[in-house]
Image 1 (tube, rainbow, N blue to C red):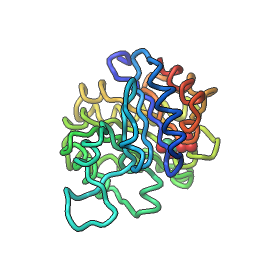
Image 2: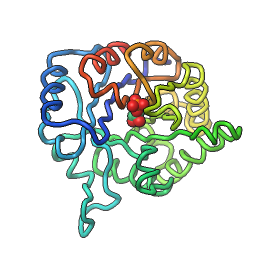
Image 3: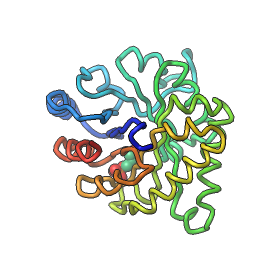
Length: 247
Ligand code: 13P
């Protein structure tokens, strides 16, 4: 089953990087080819237009809820598409926390991304508190359900999912391959109850302290199709090693 799915490694720069990093990544990645792996770079908005995505794809980290109009500071899906994006991260836990994006807003942003012809990378994942409370799977389901309710299960085929346990993000406390696989498997079977073929073909990434030295074991899990990488996506060599681990 695993081979049917698109493998992917996406680098989420968050609010990091500069023009020098754009050049390093542009020059470094465009020289390489990653067999069967979709490599995606998601820099901050101002740098999107500076990339010439050759050998890799571009993604944004957020998009507006609105098509256009009086929404100061917002960037629409169609603008992202116009400057060369194919992907957009939606629902990252940092945006849920910093910008009060709830599950309904996240669902609407997924819909906006699809309407603009972008592939949303839908992030979900629990806090340590939720995990400790024993409500893990109910919580994960409650994050995904509003999206499925809004766009329908068939359109999940046009998305990528990313499981990012909050306690593993930027902490160096990577989920073990078994912990990650358990959630990925849950998500895939939850979706399979609604549409088995969508579930079988859906790319589900893991994110949270993925590094060059732990990527291979994570990506070897049957329901983990690649990674969403924060800190390690800011160093060319580390990012390349993670992309190679997905090959
Ligand atoms: P780190 O890889 O820095 O833990 O960040 C993960 C993440 O949030 C990617 O979106």
